[in-house]
Amino acid sequence: MRTLCGTDIVEIERIKKSIERNGETFLNLIYTPEEIAYCESKKNAKYSHYAGRFAAKEAIYKAVSCLLPERFGISWHNAQVINDENGNPKVEFINIKFDKIKNIDISISHCREYAVATVSILVDE
Image 1 (cartoon, helix red, strand yellow):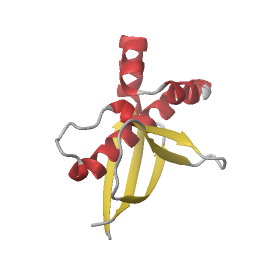
Image 2 (image 1 turned 135 degrees about the vertical axis):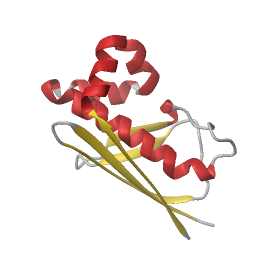
Image 3 (image 1 turned 180 degrees about the horizontal axis):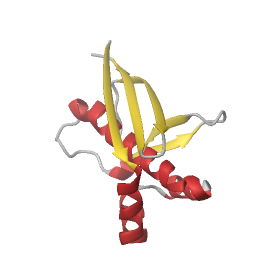
Image 4 (image 1 turned 120 degrees about the vertical axis):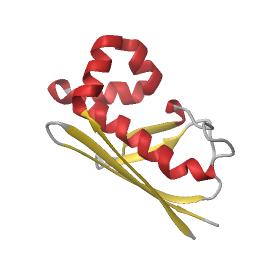
């Protein structure tokens, strides 16, 4: 067994400006419909949640990149961050399969200026 990890931090204002400037084009490029619905439900805090999901997707890529047959073998929509029944974030892979992954944990946090995400993956060697 081996543990893979990925971490990313993003400025919330950067994500907010991208959404304001590019609207649905940006949202639909990066996020799944479920992720958009979740973030939009957060009203005044939606940009923090968008930024958290963005950081999560970057952290996921960093963690799984060594499992990919080619460097860009995963797209923004192949990894979806949703919440479980307790409200904790979890990763769902869509249209991509990683046979070696046995467990994946994710943590997302944000403050006024930044959102950060860390992913830890347990894989069979």
